[in-house]
Length: 512
Image 1: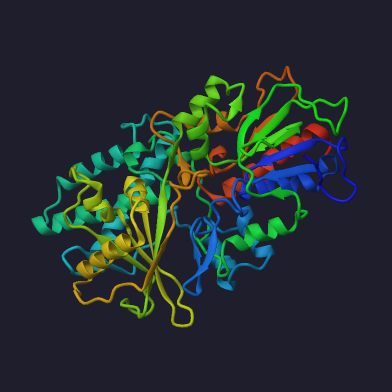
Image 2: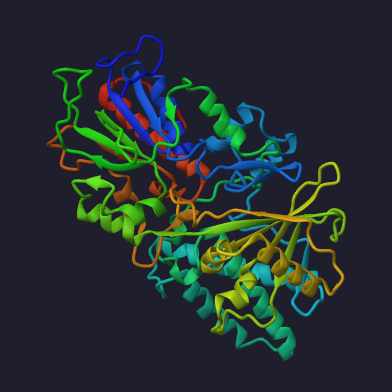
């Protein structure tokens, strides 16, 4: 396979580096390496037909829809995604303001504009605000155990439920008001499932929960699409640097591989692709999602990964959070409405209800965000996480549309509410090179497992150094699950290679 990295590059010149995966971590690593003269031989192998990975913007219904990453979390100085977006003028003026950058959200999702209950009534704003405040305080408390106090439960979910059970014992509300309060709590737990990318907060480890770092700033979106950011990075690379539709089958390492084009030279790594193509290299940066690694951990590396690293891959959590976009002829929501919360009064975090997924999957939907209307296009974006989200992927568009039409008619109390005109949804669990949305620290794992995943191979240092490096959101201990964590991890591994070749190099920031 011919290598090229720019004008004058030819086999045998510079260190050969392969980046596996063209998401923001892989693109960031490639851009960083390309700026250094030691890495003229550089390629990115991308399994699909597009760059961007889990950043995926599509123009549909006449507007830009984010099927993947939606917000910049913590848009403030020091967040590299925010800084790049600002540099490329991809954000609105209000999102760039100092006031916006200084906002402290605590990582909590903003309050809904309106809350509909399954009985067809609107829930009072006062009750929603009061319940949200209580829930957020419990989540804040759950983050405090990272400071050293013994965690009283294995998971965030069990801790919140235990605290809630004790609080509920002192409530003096009527039974219907009590049930509504608990139903709201159930919805907020489901919101937290979407935030954490998990089926249940019972799967999220309590002790390390507070290691995740929330940056200041009110979360913001890209008016022209998140993919505008990755498109800018891609455009800065030589046209032939990224090879699309090139899924990798096996990464052979700790070897001595040769090729006809470079007689006498040996390479410690050989990347074998699904189509039979082979790429020898000095270094490989693996940026594939943790979901893919989990599915292929036993076959993707030869020799197999060290036990400690393979165990870290198996123990860390990786779940699904999907979006469902509904387009309407006319909005049924009030002008200025930004977020519609949907609460099921028969659901409580203190009760387990055994049900078939096909009968209740839609109850996991936390509600809808109203997308900015554009030329009379009216679109809602629903979020749904976990096994219900994965079940939703198996349904037809017609089945999803029918179910959500029934939900909206029920909660608004309007049996004649016009059905949405069309539906579009993400299917991240079904995507073969992703197998879910993003990572979390699961019960049975710790932040140490993130560090173990991030550690380059070989670990003993006796063989050729830095043969396989690992990047991606799941390798960043404090910013896992975010685009800025992914980008920083790609820069981290690029800097690791640059420092190996050029110990005196002045590395650019930020180094969060």
